[in-house]
Image 1 (tube, rainbow, N blue to C red):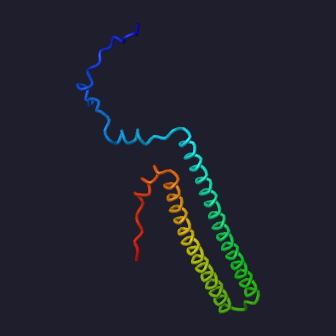
Image 2: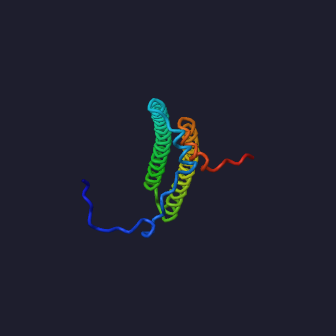
Image 3: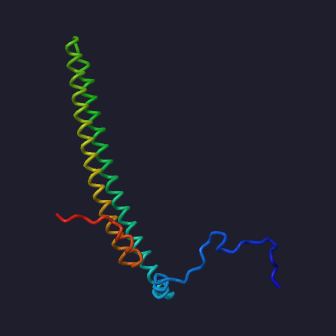
Length: 164
């Protein structure tokens, strides 16, 4: 014999709940398209391999961009060290106010040119990395939709590229 709680609950219709609805065509289609265990395992294996390939490619892109940024920063440090050394050499030879002004303006001019060049180089690296990441993302989504057709819903939501 089942234990009954002595609390009374209103009927679902009176409590604001909709009455149960018979499954529609979407539910029936889902039931018809369910996979058996071996198909499911094979699909999951394909998805896992595709995910590992995508993550490996992402790691390679990250390492490449990190190397580019590191190279640009090393070049900046080397250039700024050279500018500072030149300024100190000129400072040793200062004899008057005109020399101080000339040395400072030369130092700041070289410094600003170097910083501006470095900023341009970093902007170029960031723009190229954006393109690489976007390409990786599109390739990964396409691979996922081919590997597991259920992911094709995601590809339908992505913005379409305009053909010029």
